[in-house]
Image (tube, rainbow, N blue to C red; front, top):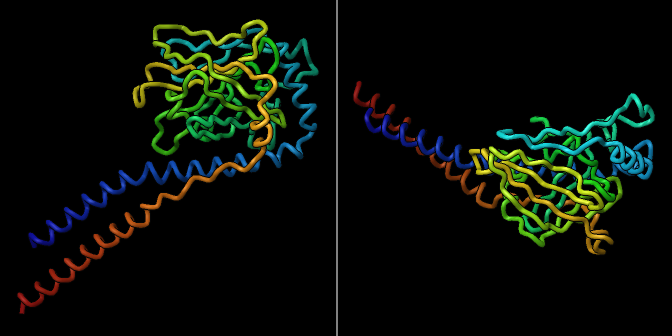
Length: 291
């Protein structure tokens, strides 16, 4: 009996530990796979939107012109909130925020690529918790990501989720690195000129700078604590580098299946077989002892 109990406890501990170790990797791989599929469908959605993509970009630029202000990342907030508003009553021809740059019912606004940290994510409207579990979110109240003088768009994503990578490595982006936004046929490349960590007692404004075309990426830090925020800001490169234009719309690279996963599963199966064998042997010995 003792041998059976010992074997069962050991097997149970190994199975539980293996599950805890394997889950984040499997979940992250599945999340990246789903994001890749969404990104790949985006180009097709944009080609069939109504009104067409050029008209939507023009409407987005008109919306940006009417923004009253930028956005403020308030102290001790994990997710920033936009303070910019558009007076829709005085501008009835302007679409509301959630109808701007809308490709399909999923609400995909665009695509962000950060080559230096291997990020390729869909961009959705807003920064709700539901949105940020799926990909990157555009911060309402900041400029829509269509470029232009005196604009600053803000894109945010989670960091440290066990089931998704997202902006986990944003802290590794350096000045001089570039990132690209693909939005309704527009390809906008930004060169990073500023990276900073904002302390919780600071109230950091993410505002438009006159005459500049800026984009800021935001996530929380440190991992698991989320008491501070990382801000990575780039200024647009004009004209857009030919390589970025050529690669726009290309299918995203699907994440590689973890090669060690089948091995791990095989080991777990062996443990299960071992446990089953111990149970059979114990029952057999028990029957013999009772004769």
